[in-house]
Image (cartoon, rainbow, N blue to C red; front, side, top):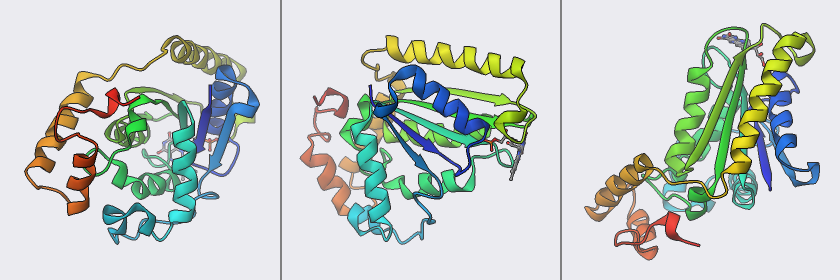
Length: 233
Ligand SMILES: Cc1cc2nc3c(=O)[nH]c(=O)nc-3n(C[C@H](O)[C@H](O)[C@H](O)COP(=O)(O)O)c2cc1C
């Protein structure tokens, strides 16, 4: 199983260790690919909309392409982000913005509909719902059918400060998530994904695209007819 870890931080704190723990429960170290943000994508979306017409025209395509290719090659994505001001880290949000052309409303990738993903977050004590939710929304709208989440308050500024009892609890919860991932051979594409995809299909059929390229993209794949990305081998 190939696992892709995308850390919303450069440092190796609690969220990094949670991500590593989960990845190592799933697979061998040589099957794990890791990106750190902002180290591996040190840019903000400029709002130029170049990607809407041609993804390779993004001013930051060089970095973006590496991350997208790694996503395509992996079976499971693990996104980790500390809770910063009740939100994901700025670096994580920046990557998400950079990938907005992959949303179902634009040009989703077929292979997204076969992936599994986990979003992990740690806070001092506040709810991680919003930090996780922002990442989870993107995963859903990219078409990822299987998304698990886990957020935890640790009252710590680094992994070393996390109390042993809390580490035990984290370990236990991550073991459960890993077991569920392993047991799910082929993720089931749910009714919500199918519903949203069909709404997008109606929009593209009606010419409500952000660029003519989008309608062409959907048409080429037969998505304006009966073909669906989750049916593609
Ligand atoms: C810029 C910043 C903002 C933070 N905002 C919050 C917050 O809103 N709520 C909270 O409970 N903890 C907050 N924290 C604490 C971290 O979420 C917490 O220490 C977390 O465990 C850090 O994870 P890490 O070790 O992976 O960096 C913040 C920390 C920083 C540096």
